[in-house]
Length: 136
Image (cartoon, rainbow, N blue to C red; front, side):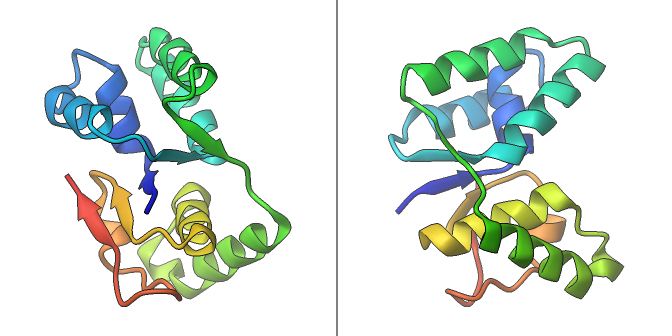
């Protein structure tokens, strides 16, 4: 079963100065099934640049190139599902990237999400399981 990753965990794992670097780096370092939906890559780059951690994007891309992280591109039905989720959870202010993570997880059959954002992922109900398991 793939470990679908949210921006928060990947960013923390990449940036040594992040207060949650150690547990996040340990989590991702012990798995060989790390999946990052493509929108997460873009969000990490923007976050890293805004916080002066430009090396984070380079480190992520090295992990993609060496095969330790798999980037999962979105497909047309994923966009439709993300739109549906954003509408359904509008009061939660569910953004596109989080909705995309759910859509990709559903398509891949992933039931575990690596995230520090339990506020969104604990509430959203996926189609393929009762609830996501959230790590760490």
